[in-house]
Amino acid sequence: MPETTPGYQKFLAELKRRSVFRVAAVYGATAFVVVQAADVLQEALHLPEAFLTGIAVVALLGFPLAIVLAWAFERTPQGVVRTGSATPEEIAQIVAQPASRRWPSGILALVGVAALAASAWLILVRGPTGGGVRSAEASVAVLPFTNLSGDPETEPFADGLHDDLLTQLSKIGALTVISRTSVQEYRNTTKNLRQIAAELGVSTVLEGGVQRAGNRYRINVQLIDAATDAHLWAEGYSGELTTANIFDVQTDIATSIAAALQANLTAGERENLGRVPTENLEAYEAYQEARNRRRYYEDVDLRTADVLVSQAIQRDSAFAEAWALKAVIASQMYWFFYDRSDSIVNAADDLSRHALELAPGLAEGHWARGHYFYRTRLDYDRARAEVERALDDRPGEADFVSLSGDILRRKGDFRGALSRYERSVELAPRDPNGFLAVCETLSLLREYEEAEAVCRRAIELQPDYSSAYTQLAFMRVAAAGDTAGARRWLTEGMAAGADSPQQDPGASGTDLAPRS
Image (cartoon, rainbow, N blue to C red; front, side):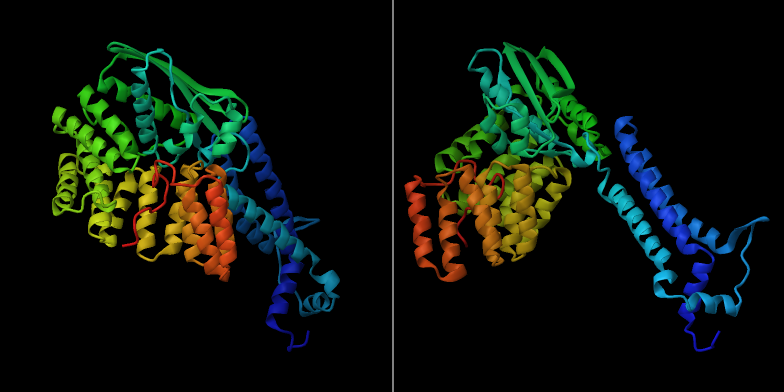
């Protein structure tokens, strides 16, 4: 063989002579089939996910071993022997072959190995791809609980129980839990569960009923696979009405849902789920009502919420969540120009500090500190640090996610803010405010076409949503100087009766305060 033959050609010819390409192609194709068959068997036989992961790992680790064996040994009529070195004539004969005969096995090897690697990557990184409810798809919508008592006074209790269960579930990082704002419209709905799940983008739905008579309660819940209408889990609870009992029920429901959806709980999540914030039932009920009123950002609603949460604190001065809520209300009173006094700012600071003194590490406490730094001090770095700390414990809490997006946007990190707002839309897919926040942020990034599609979605959810029409009009001018188009959007909004954003703004994203 001429000495001018490049070394890489000699090496490739040696790989072909030793059948390394052929072995790689056969191994890759066979292993790909095995991995796909294992995926089907894992689902059909309800085998643990470790089975499929193990198959993928073995398939990947076996590949280099197969290549080494193909290089070192060959099969002969005398059996398997070590492969000897090629003569220059043998190498020259291979190199002299036409390309169409020389390297087809090499191409097949690349295809087979690429298919195996892609299949294994999907399983090891993204998770199993088959049907069924698995941790990567663990999503649930908790519908408002039905008041089975027929007594209107039981309604606040049922609503509070529903709220607190959502709070408990938001502590589980492996779960996607739809927020309160997006499930409220399904109270007393005539839609079937499959339709509800499709609209909310979840795999399962939890529905339940509540009865209360004096100091006794009864709660029935059932978790349903939306695709099959199969009951994944159901339970009934009854007992004396105490906060300890109620939180035990909520903890059991949350952990049972996680188990049914194969969502693993960390030690920290189990500890957070078991925490009882107060043992005073009257304080607990006042706090629940205050939390509900705070969601409506009118002056009278915030002041009413402040009175209610103050009553909760009077009944239990160690109720850390109540102190945190009162701090958030103070920050919002300042932010929305209902009270711009120094005393309200100092109150937001002192109250949020005290909440964390009572319960160090409390997610609501750090969330309250985030509100304080963001809304009263415009200190976005410290606000972000506090909210991120809250998200460590409550990654599925839409309020926390949306506030983190607001802070990032004020800092000029539009991409980071967009990611948080998109997550808030996942958690509250029926709340137009979340879509508006995404639309606004896309427009800041000058991605007007995509922004318009998102704003249109907000209007589909709420046809009289004035902020969406205004944003669309603004974008027509910003994108193309189209004042006529802007006028058409504003006219369309007035024709639709647009007046003000729906109640509960900010629960899933939009930063509705003046641009200070």
